[in-house]
Amino acid sequence: MTKLRKQRRRKVYRHNVNRKRLRNKIFNVGNIGCKEIKNEWEQKKSVETNLKDMGLSYDSNKTIEIPNSKKVYKASLLSNKDEWNEEIVNEQPTKEKSYVAAILEADAKAPRERRFRLPKSQVEWITYLMKKIWK
Image (cartoon, rainbow, N blue to C red; front, top):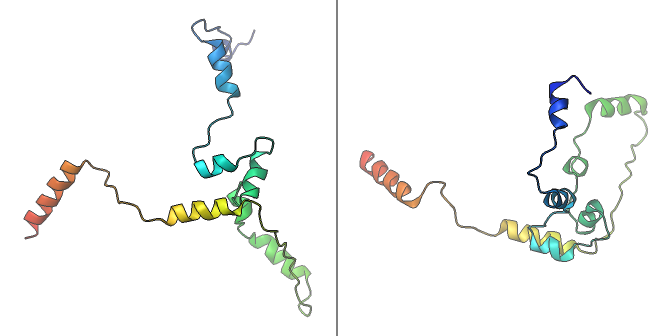
């Protein structure tokens, strides 16, 4: 048996926990909130390939990579100044479901009603006070 207090506490069996509900919670895949993505989701593909097919980013750090100044400096020292630098550009083929990204972008750009974080009565009271003070 371990001597650590937290390890001992973990070994206590909790009788009041519903094991079936706990197992279902652990193995639950989760729900997709966005209906556009949910309609085009393929269960047999991984999350990364599904998002890639839709034209969406799985990891924003890889998609929009910040250039490492140290690597750029080393590359400039190693390359000759007289030669042209050739950059290899990987052209990605058009995605099968690129319309999903277009729909999401259009939805994000759509105008929306501005919502105050305060209740309407408090907003009216504050505007009344502001008008009264700055007459």
